[in-house]
Length: 100
Picture 1 (cartoon, rainbow, N blue to C red):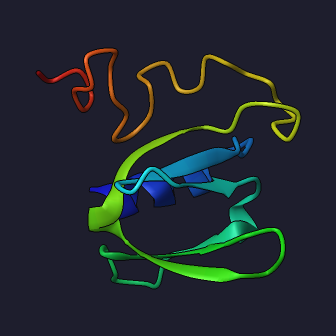
Picture 2: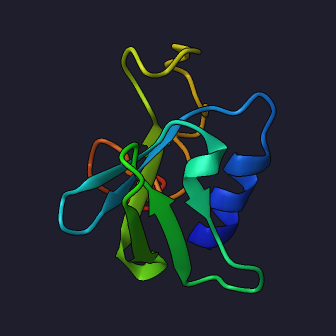
């Protein structure tokens, strides 16, 4: 369940920045846990705030994968996060979580 995957990532210590990838090819950056809010008891709605303060409401059905945020904004620079590729990630064949 994508909302629970995001909640888990938000609780991790230390926090690891990540990106949410959508079906339309867009990616939403989450450089800090304060940039995402998931209402209690909701599993289909995620609010993502960009660095300019713009809030985007995202239906979790539109999320295809979550990956670590790479580049200079990722202060940890850990390219191994997470070892499994993250919730909803795709393998080299485009299969979700390597299931196909």
